[in-house]
Amino acid sequence: MMKKELLVIENLTVRYGQVEILKNINLIVHSQEILCIVGESGCGKSTLLSSISGLLDSGATIASGEIYFDERELTKVSQEELRQLRGRRMGVVFQNPGTSLNPIRKIGSQFLEAIRSHYPISTNEGNERILKMLEKLSLRDGKRILQSYPFELSGGMNQRIAIALAMIMEPDLLLADEPTSALDVTVQAQVIKEMLKLRDTFSTSIILVTHSMGIVAQMADQVGVMYSGEIVEYGSKANVLRSPLHPYTKALINAVPSLVGSIPQGIPGSPPSFGVERRGCSFAERCTLRESKCFSQKPKLREIRKGHWSACWRY
Ligand SMILES: Nc1ncnc2c1ncn2[C@@H]1O[C@H](COP(=O)(O)OP(=O)(O)OP(=O)(O)O)[C@@H](O)[C@H]1O
Ligand SMILES: [Mg+2]
Image (cartoon, rainbow, N blue to C red; front, side, top):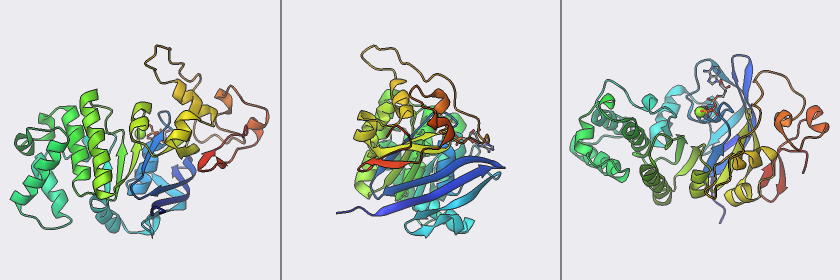
């Protein structure tokens, strides 16, 4: 059976001021699917998530394109409608957990408010539900946590609380921006397990931004590789990790420290600055396989094998 398309992004272009940051992004996320987004710092991963959740910075504009969530076109709906969608149907875990939590209010009341903005619930019932969720994310001292302010807890705890807050409404889509980067490996494993369980239990789709290929290997169904505001490769985890097509993806995978002792190569050079017009491929300067064509013509994202897309002239 074909799974339902929950999120469809078509030709999305986003600018900060005059500078184009996201360029013509196309993506589909099916229900129950986990899409991992990878790419170097500054390539636009957080901007992509904020475009979907309607939480772009005030200086940013959606210059063109559409975002369909369950067939509703999000770039046209009101702020109030977006606010209703967030929380209830779309959970957001921000890259900086400080953004998710109000520093001057106790954790318990923040959770209750989040739930009550969608339906009425008694304090006892609410707390019970919150404690269960905290426990799932290895936050055992739940009663104390509910009575605490964020500053009284460690960064790793706040990170998990932010994840719990995004998951408590059992959303259809979870947008998680580096949700486990501040956690030690044991807790990270627990959080990954809970996100997978959320998907299995409530058919939640997840878009997960991560720098860790290990997390991609554990969690992804599909993988999107971003470079300089574009998707340069997209496909199933097996295809992208085992037989990457784009030289940038290969370089990213080689940049990961491996357990067998080979020294990570890193990717020589740095990404191009945004706002500079270029005719060719944005990775050409750093690419070891470039040809003259790569500097003069831009390769489009094309389906090279079934379900496996790449933007490179070599294919
Ligand atoms: N509020 C803003 N105003 C202007 N430019 C911004 C703003 N926010 C981000 N940018 C720029 O947009 C580009 C993409 O940023 P973004 O935060 O989306 O990248 P990222 O892939 O999430 O990076 P990281 O891995 O470091 O989190 C960067 O060049 C950044 O400098
Ligand atoms: Mg980011």
